[in-house]
Length: 140
Image (cartoon, rainbow, N blue to C red; front, top):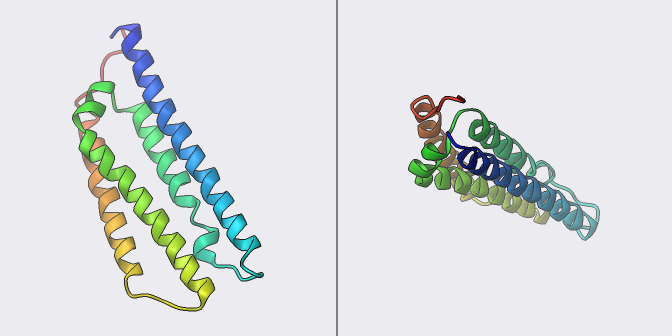
């Protein structure tokens, strides 16, 4: 493995970590602004929606830095995109649930966000974890 390959691997995992950190801060900021203009009404779903990008980003960041080489990342690109879309779906679903709770209403479609988002995350992470042992390169 050349130094350029190691730099690409570190750069890709660093980019993932920074992106999820920014999204975590943005969800916290969105919740604080919504709380400010919500006349004192809060929602647990909106308060805790930052955990999806935080935990999801931390999970994929640890997998990307520990096990998945740059070759595997390119090979499993569609699964990686599916994982990121699942985290986004879960976050948006929690945001909408929080908005509807603050408004005092409910929707039957909120369960679909949870089902679809969770299945996207599972379908995205399983191939990365199962294929990660095949593409580990030696550090020498």
